[in-house]
Image (spheres, helix red, strand yellow):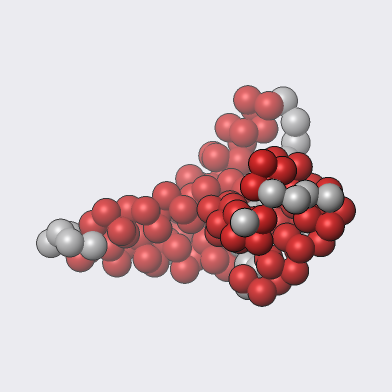
Length: 147
């Protein structure tokens, strides 16, 4: 079963079980996938769907950070619950050590010498880590290893 089918099946199950939080979130995710497909006129593969999931996860993480100092614990809890649901669908995230290994391989393949060659390294690296690692973290590791 591919990811699109899984999302649809889980949406149907959530509707049957009257799990409103999961149903609403899965509808948002499916709408995001369909919008990307419609805009780019392609059918998303597993990596493309993982990218949509990662964006939705990131939105909620940023919302939790923004609300951290407020009296909106209900919104923080809701966003954290949604993040937990999204994590069920995201591919296993790479650890910093795994990212660092991939960065070292990309540096050696590209022949990069300094931070000016960062674009070449990222071009080689991003297809390998897409959807499995935060872009900011990858960027920071590349900078650290090229300095």
